[in-house]
Length: 335
Image 1 (spheres, rainbow, N blue to C red):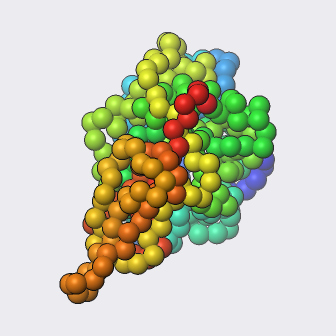
Image 2: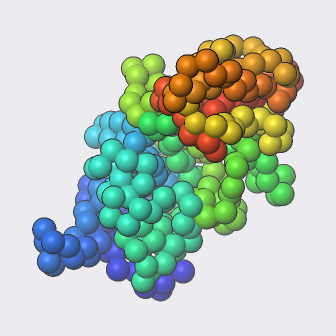
Image 3: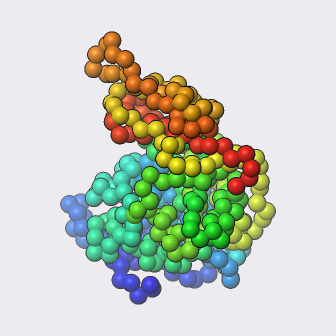
């Protein structure tokens, strides 16, 4: 698909040797700059023969462990440490990242719901189209950092998906294990249509993602997990020199939709279980109190299966239809 036309042009050679820092340059005419461009930072590190890894952060702009870990990696990595190629885009949805929002302030685009994008579409669609047709085809290994953003908080886990191609799934699981987060999740998506994950997996790529904390910020712990994990991922791929650093991880699974607890009313959230705590099916994990008057019986929301609380709504107030919690099953035997 190298001949697929895109308005985006890289300011650096994606195929040359060495370390190159530059931009994905996307024309963007606006009030502030009639003939302006959106300049999305990119680093490419190449050395000899070997696989290609495509690493991204800020697919959603209010998730920060990825941009921090990848900016750090882009500043430290040396060509002599690499066998193959590493393509680093620390902020995939760059407009959302600059605004500190999940979605783009330019067009409202949710980057993880608009693949394969359109070369003649909105700004977000043009970025998705460039990844779909110009970057993903180059990659053997794909890693996309996520966390909970401003509205969710998660246990720090690496994740991959159940796939029809079990050989591909096994490669993804091996790479997820190599990342070696404190938790490793077989992740069930509410809706996988239009996701970057789905686009990469449909091409047969080894794809791994994360959820590392949340609340629209980052912590020293989650940043350390991200930095160590992405180095492990590249070592596992045979791209970065060194041994994979392995520590304990808890294997989790989301077997079906009963994992998700959804609010049916708006109000004030009273958490009844903290992240990482064990829960039993039918156990109340949260209550939602009326914010309109006193004397009302709060709504109670219960776990749909035995496991641990792996994710929760972050702000104190919630609306109907919002995700209130995620319960994951503990896998006693190794994934």
